[in-house]
Image 1 (cartoon, rainbow over the protein chains, first blue to last red):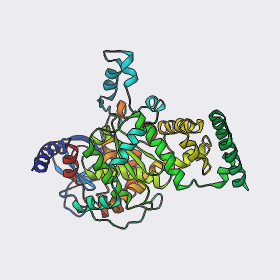
Image 2: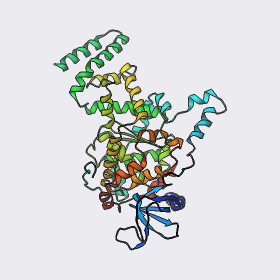
Image 3: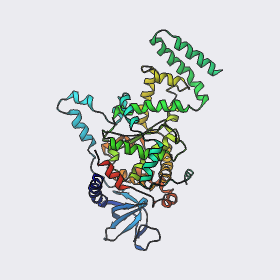
Image 4: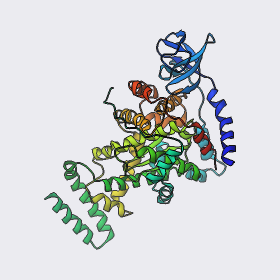
Length: 166
Length: 276
């Protein structure tokens, strides 16, 4: 029951997030497809550098909306977000968060407590064996991981690595 | 012959009465062993794991684990399942989420893998998580970090000597390894190593039954962010630009498309991560 509630909650968070329109640019001339498949009917041709809004991803395809208002699917790797030369704005807030932590209210004392993964913080890192032990305590065995995969119907396949450049 | 000299030197060092003397000798042994080790080639798996444990412990010193057991166990399971599909299925694989706001992922020799909370928060499915973990697993398979350490010649890694150095909690050799390790994570690997890890990573994800577009999807998320974002500084400094990585991955389109219908598992991902 709790799992169901959690899934519902998660789904309600996930769906709007996945549908958020993200401005993107088509990097080469291609076709807007009715469905996410190469053999699907073509809705409209797409010119190189066309501006679109990306809506959701499915396998190697992304659903988009063109400036003219047409909707359909395009190969995911034919898209780049916030096209070249444009200024991407915003910040995930890491700098601000750290600045707050650094300056804090208690000044210098707060600085020593700040940990993180910027080069200077890495350079000052000392081993933390207690935390390593904790991680090792959470480890999954080969067998339990196989059960975890089977629960979601993940099927192992035998696939060779590609050669470089291919 | 080299081995005998080394054993003699070790025996002498071990016989040294004072701890200070011992440390001094260890460093001299490491320095003299360096050239021998270059010729000797591969570091044994036991030493590889010990080096990895030390570096993993240091990364955990920079940022501890996120205090969420369900999240940690989930990431361990996804990672272990992926690792089981590789050529080194029996390493003591470990996977953890570091409590850091920056977006990054790390691997240490012997099978120690980390992803940051900042990067995990930007992911949308288990297939995306699998793509990132598989990239890091590929670094371990190809021993990219181990080779970088060996190439530097900064840390003596003759079989046996390093284990000894790591066991001696205060040895200078151990300090050297830690210092070099943190510098390596700040500087990054070779560009070619990163592209190779992408190339292998998408295959490992597909082998495990995931939609192999998970890794490219995360790269697109990074590519969509402001490159000046402070959370991306180290990741962008140590990796080729996302657009370049996407371009290289696109050469594998036929393979990716053959398995693009495999599972993304958005629901298991989001329901697990929303647990406390």
